[in-house]
Length: 447
Image 1: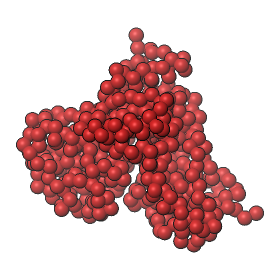
Image 2: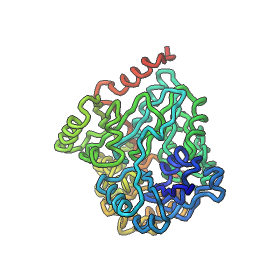
Image 3: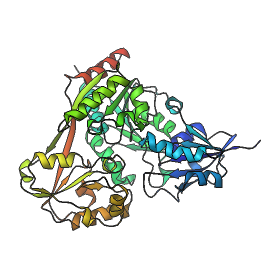
Image 4: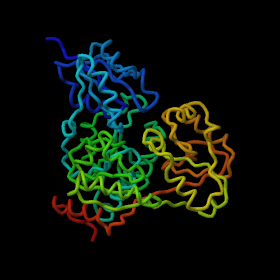
């Protein structure tokens, strides 16, 4: 019998997870290729045979995007499986329509079809868009659990860069592990702060194997989501973040709106400097779509070690890369810090951008006068270094969670910006975590 020909539309993460769970062992289907979107330097690689399984002795090619209608015709595809996140509903149908105009089917996979059941209680931290503040909320929950005598272990959404055959399961306990696994800047942004807390962290590509490795490492598992993707594990407490700076996006992005409809608890993670009209719009949208879901009002506390060093200076602001690029934000915590602590000028880096950084500004014209911390490869990291060196400024204000001084030689003072979640709802988030622990019979061991 002819095998059904499958194309998986991806971005180097969710796509591999969908393949592993839905297609790896199916003899009635043949996955012809993955496409690569959003993340640079993905096309031209191969999903290796060691991960693809016995049905794919040569692995599976990862190809660049081309007009999808032409692609599915050229490859005689029967079914295109959409497998990446943070796309507007409008863009989603712009992708689907040329495919559906051919004999090919277009598939969206139900969230629970790719969730794994853990033996530990699971708290998932997801969002409606990239850059809502998931990582600070994950750290906040980890601190609370540690104070209660629990042993949290974090599993991070995949960032499948580098040599895939060496990344099936990645375990991080110390900062040196980041070097051992040859982590990109984007991975370090997520991993460094958790490792500094002393929380074990796992990631990888084969999430069944990742889960089995994570379960002995703690007694409560936290799923730290990427972009606005749905969790890979069935959650006992499903926390979803919304962003009032982008009010309206909670209803109009995929799969963020799926997350919103599934949430046990919704967290507003940013309130400072948000126009009241945005907050009103967000409240109305939540009330109309998920009126029964509890809401936590929160904020991000932005700080620097030496506020006086910012006052009056010409500052170059470095922001978290994914938030500023495909997350759609023009600025982040770095600009907030520059304004709050009295910078004399925020220097526009765009005229000085080098190589791939210049291409990032061209691809994402919404980016403001900030440098997105892009480092998906050694070459791009060097482009970042050259860009920072070229901008005339007194101070680099770095709001990426990564310690850039560990990765780059920067010939001017660097001041790091920290941002941590604070609960403005009288401890509602902690109470929700405690209620989950009580429901599952887990008591505090911190007497």
